[in-house]
Amino acid sequence: MKDLALKSMCDTYKMVQKIRVAAENRLRAIKQEYDEKDPRRIIALNHIKSIERFEKEVVKEADEVLSSFPIYAEFLSKVNGISVRTSLRLLSLGLDINKELSSWYAYFGVVPIYWACTCEKGHKVLLPKDPFLTGATCIQSVKTNSDSDVVKDEETGKIQMVERVEMRKCGAKIVSAEPKPPTKVRGYYHFWNDYAKETYFIVTDYWVKKPDNSFYGRVFINERRKLMERGVDYVRTVKGKVVPSRRATLSARRKAFKIFLAHMYQASRELNGMQYRMPYSFEFLKHDDFIDWKKVLEIEKSLRKKDKKIR
Image (tube, rainbow, N blue to C red; front, side, top):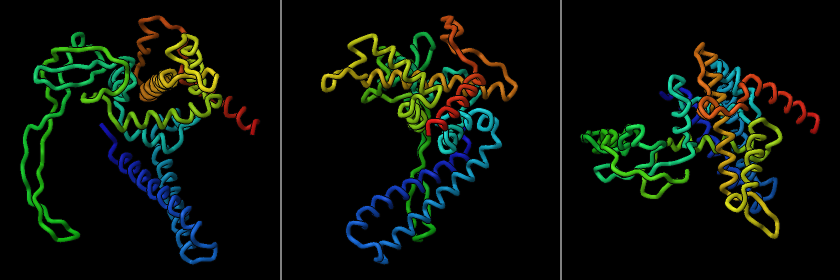
């Protein structure tokens, strides 16, 4: 279940950030039209400074609130590239530690294969696993009931009719399923949460841009290098130079984030006194290179020290 207070705080920050960016864009145009002493330019600049102060205040308050969450204090705040803002986005999702790690992967849309399915009612949906093995049914949202209500706008005083709609999952039997690469398919209702998937890209952005500064950045760069060694599907040539393809970058990015989620899941359960189950590839496929989240934090700390020396 989502944490409504954190979601509200996160929405406030996003709204302020959007206003600040828009104001900065307008200021660039104003600077071209008015000189430094023009009062209109001064007023626009002061507005941006006020917005920046408020934005910093929201981040400061978020840090104070998040500090009461063990997963933030003991893990997220110590991971290089995970800021107060990204932690706020992650924790506002209300990830359930009672569920399996695979359900977290599905929620963020980072499973390796999507299943393009059709239900007996004709709905087209993407599922994270083969429905004929899991028994999954159609997840398409359908309207079950609607009702009209009269509402008065408190600001304008106008009275208007509002339709209130009740939705539920279709739940019909899946009649066909075909494996697809992990990309969105036009015309199919997807299983992942759009806000969570956006968060996934925001979280991994630092690791992609500064891979040497974080454990997860190094996971990304090493995985991409391995994929490039496979050949044509994972490389492209630009001006005579061999560079990673988009597929290689996205696959490596997904691998880094999945390992991060596994550590976040492990830390969340251990900090709450719960047992932890190893990810599938390590428990069943017998991969032996899994690193405990506490060891990862030691690596992150050493990388922070190296980064400070370079600066």
